[in-house]
View (tube, rainbow, N blue to C red):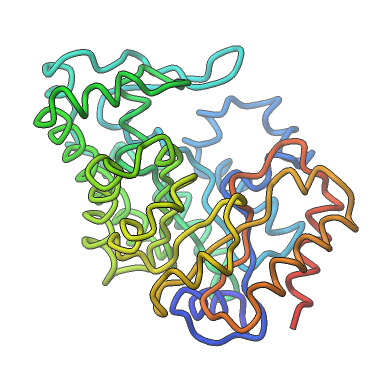
Length: 341
C-alpha cells in the first residue's frame, strides 16, 4: 500500500496493519542540510521562495521516507497577508510589526488579494505535489483563529495572553469581528492549498490550552468549527489544539477528521472519548528524540501497543520537533512505526 493511500485510510478511520507516520511542521530543522540553508537565507526568504521552501520540505522526506510531508511555511503568513507583518526577536519569539490596539486597527485588516499575496505557498505546493505524486501524502496547514489573534493582539509572543483574553471578555463584538476576519482569510488560504492538491490541512491551535473550559468554545472552538465546516467536504481536516484535551466535547463539535493529541494525555483513552469516525494524531513527547534510540523505540512501541486495535491513528509527535532532535533517533522512530504490525 502506498504511503498516501495509508494516510488517507487512517484519516477515514479505516483498518490498517500499522499507522502512517509523519512529523509536525518544520520537520527538517534539526538537519544539517537545513542549517546550511539557514546560513545563506533568512526564514522569510526560505518561506517566500518556492524553490527553497520545496527543498526544506523535501529534506526530511529524502532522509526518512515518512508517509507524508507538510509544507514548509509559517502560521503568521495570514496576518502578514492581512496587513500585519511579523519578524523574529533576537532572543527568540515572534514580534509583530505592530499590535492591534483599537477597533480601527482591526478594521484595516483585509484579506483582499490574499490569493496573490500567498501565491508563493501555492507555487511551493505545486512543486511538492509534482514531486510526491501518488506515493506520499501532502499536508498543508494554518493557525487557528484564536492562536493567530493572540499574536496579533499581544503584538507578538506572550507569556500570559492577557490582552487577547481581555478583548474577549470586554468587547465580544470587536473580538468576534476580528475572529470573523481571520477565519475568512484562513478559509481562503486553505482553499489555495486544496487547489494545489493537498491531501489534508492541519489547523494548529497552539494556544487553545490557555483558555478555560468555560470559554474555549466561544473563544476558539467555534471558529475552528467554522473553518472545518467550510472545508470538510473538500479535504481531510486535522485539528491540533495543544493542552485542550479536557475540552473533548468542544473538539468533537469542530467536526474534524482527526484530532491531534499532545503527550500529556493517554492517546488510547483520548481515542475512546471520540466518535468512531474521528481519528487521532500523536503523541510522542518531542523530547524523546533528544535521548537514545533504545528509548525512542520503547516509547514508540508503548504508544503503538496502546493503540492496537483502534482505527484512525496517524503516528506523530505530541508537538513540533525540536532543533536538538537527533537524526539516529528520528531514523529509529520511523523504522519502529513502519515495521510495527
